[in-house]
Length: 343
Image 1 (tube, one colour):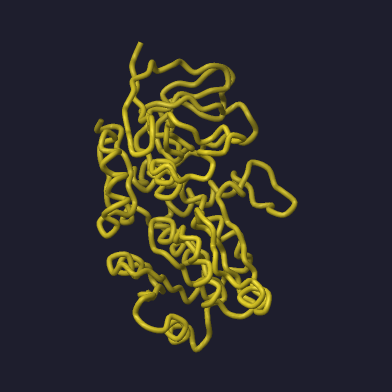
Image 2 (cartoon, rainbow, N blue to C red; image 1 turned 60 degrees about the horizontal axis):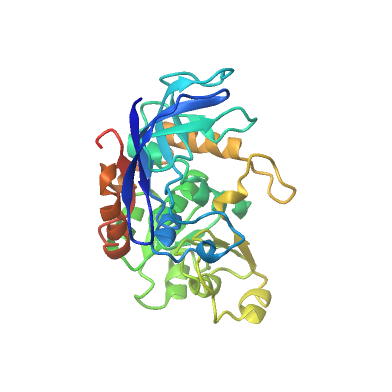
């Protein structure tokens, strides 16, 4: 039997690789050979460093150590099981793939988490497609987008993707906010994007100067830092929306909700990617099939460029080095994908 390879986190800050026997697909399953997988700079690092809220929650089965990380990958189907008609061998697909060389995916249900993508989309960009569902949720939660002024606080990978999605959807003007000059420079490669250093003077005045004297209609918090919500709320227009897409881990301890939120009639909106499910919900009708169709269209058409955000595309066995780089060398690391064909 052929052997595959997968990454495992036995404990915080540790990565090992374990071989496994590549199985044959059963009824309703497809076997995929991974081309590339993308690192989630939020969830994966929270688990890697041991700070994810659910690690210590006995009522949660996920995540727990030992843990196989990853949830965004691209690859090719190598075999299909009985009764599989919607997918075929050699077909290139994106799916919620872990950091492993091969994967069995169940496609028997009505809404499999699997979608075709053409060969012209570079592997690093295609590997980020499932990850892009998370900033896409900010776009969905925004409601009206066309012509809205949008500021994105935090220009890591999720913030950069959020800016580009809002640009593709017709928001303008767009303002990226980050204290790192390299990330600001990268954000400005998207037409219509201006940037600000939040530590270089009066942030509200600078935003107003870039937006015709008004504060932004929408502020997207992509920092992952709990107390950033106070900054986001302070720089959005009265009656505007603050959309939380950065999965803040911790307690925002100094927010005055009476005035900062209630008194200014703001909307504070959560936008986690898990809100986009397989079926419509009463309060959130956008569904996964529609999201994946749109993301793939953006990537295939060139409306959404991602490849330049992936600063490291490396052999999979360098995963530990990549985690450490994302933690400690943020000026050099942004998007990271693993090349399973080179491992």
